[in-house]
Amino acid sequence: MITEARAMLRRADRHRSSWSLLRYVPNPKTTPFTFGYLVVLLGTTLVLEFADPALTDRLLQLSSTDAHNLWRRPLASLLTSAIWLPGESWFAYAAIFAVAVAPLERRFGVRRTALVFFAGHIVATLVTELPVMALISAHVLPASAGHWLDIGVSYGFFTTAGALVFLLHGRMRLLALAAMEAFVAVIWLGDDPASLDSIVTLLGHAFAAHFGLLVCGPWLRASIRRPEPNSAG
Image 1: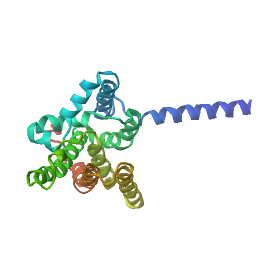
Image 2 (image 1 turned 90 degrees about the vertical axis):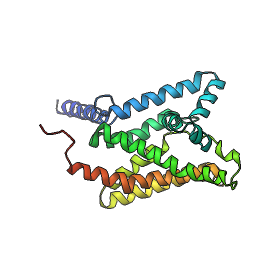
Image 3 (image 1 turned 30 degrees about the horizontal axis):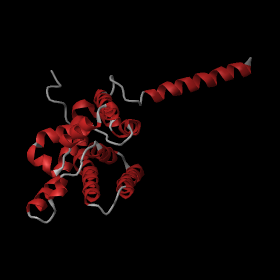
Image 4 (image 1 turned 90 degrees about the horizontal axis):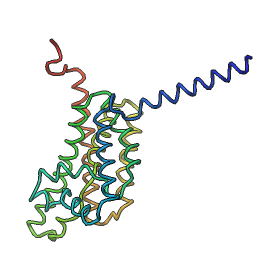
């Protein structure tokens, strides 16, 4: 009887552990921004998978935040470029969002998390693409440099990751910072590191990560000590 009771207790502990892990999975109740964003990315991923290739190519070209689009349709490209994962696994990004975006949302809420994410996406895009536009105008770069496909959520992800690193303490912050910097380097080296678009993307990732670390993280920490507007009364 004692052995059976111990076995039942172990099974109960495993059951409770499984349920406790589920609370870290993005869901519409505790992390609506993260969950909703993943739903949008799943939808666009299914479009890329099953829609007509000519249509999807056109959609990606219109959404790209390359220099050409930023000059002709800046708002549309900035808003739509972060809803696609061309050639990338949705499941991998679901895990990334669970690790980097959801924890920020659980602590700071939808509004601040969305602001950090999209501020990083927009600012890193402009910081990297506006110089490309200037160099094209000065005939330093060919016009073709303004037409590469620049799409994805990585700038927003690295911004939230940088903010989370700032919010850590002591050795954990140093380890997380090293891991983030290594991740930036691995992505760059995994592509064609000598190509111009890879270099621009590397700079965008590095800027987004440090924008989150040096700007968004301190802002979030300061916001803990400030009450929300109209929160009282």
